[in-house]
Image (cartoon, rainbow over all chains, first blue to last red; front, side):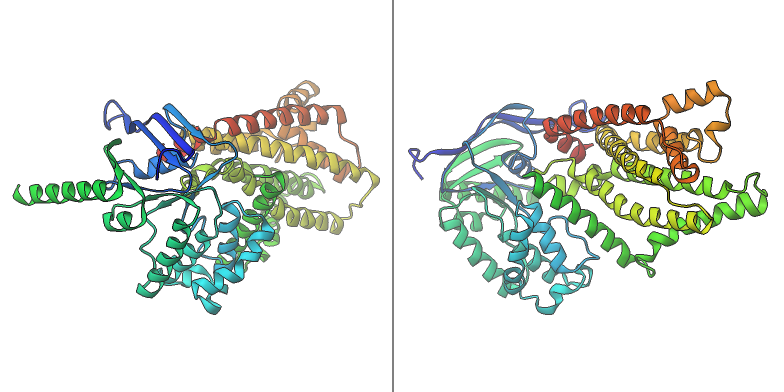
Length: 243
Length: 257
């Protein structure tokens, strides 16, 4: 992706910290992101890699406008919207899959009419059959994630933010989910894709950012950054085994 | 999010909460009517059977007061916990935070409709008639709704700032229950004290207004009602603006508090 493509979203020196309690971190302040600057270009797929707990989800929440930075600036191109692709949004186990899919689609911005029109497609893609009308509490974990993934797939936004979701269902459904996701990603859709699985990121993304302790350690070509990240993870693991 | 979409979401969230609730209980939706009837049954047992109540219509007096108060207290208490309770959703999507308390208040409206029907039924059985004065219930119900929504928003925001407020809110509800003339008649106090209670406790005024309309076919003090409506309406608008401008801060507090 070249830099002549217009910016759709930009972060300038973004920091986010919060008061986490009296005895934790530095006098109760928890710094999740520190001076993070990044650009997102229209139509690209940007990957974010990093271990658990380094601020990936918080960064996505800032990009989605769920959280505001404590310091710095987030600029979204005029008239554009970003949304987190979320599994099982607001699921209520006592209610049927159909009702949950309807609520989830509406929470993601669809009108009631649109959400109702999605239901047949959701039922078909999720391969739930008549279970679609049964309470979600009777579903197996796999069935639940199939419903959740399919509902989430219906979101239509300018920037799609995806947080570790491609490990859903059984092997058959996972293949289908990955193909559906790839179709979205390789199209005109702008995507930010977060994962700690480097191979998935390398395969799907044009550019990658490596996040560690709330800072950007490296950014650029997906192959270079993911291999540097994989090496560092392997080094850390070797170090741990030695000690 | 358009206003229509917002309204649809509130409605669908409320209905789904109710449906989920109903599936959990063997008696399901019957509880909507059964619960207020049991309340009245308890009052009957305590005040009429055991304490051999002083007034013939004391049971009606109690039922009206208590059932109106329960609408307020249950809605506000549940709504206060709603943003924190919905933090799974708050962390995943940037929706207006007012959606959470509003869905709870809406749920309360559906339940209260059944309660009011029950109450009117009980009044009928006891020989009270519907009169033209009952039209005053329309503005009264609207003002009551505005008071509930405004308090629900304040409670939900306070609990986001510190969960300790939940304790204070439930204590406040007990305080209000005893000071709003549910078990005793504001009008039996001497004039000065009655004025003090009605002037400074809007819940006491609202409860008294329901009794005046439904039991005594008397119009409530409409100026007083309008003042309460305007004051809480202004508070509601201020809270809507606050929640809109501080939406991300509320999300951070709900996720990290």
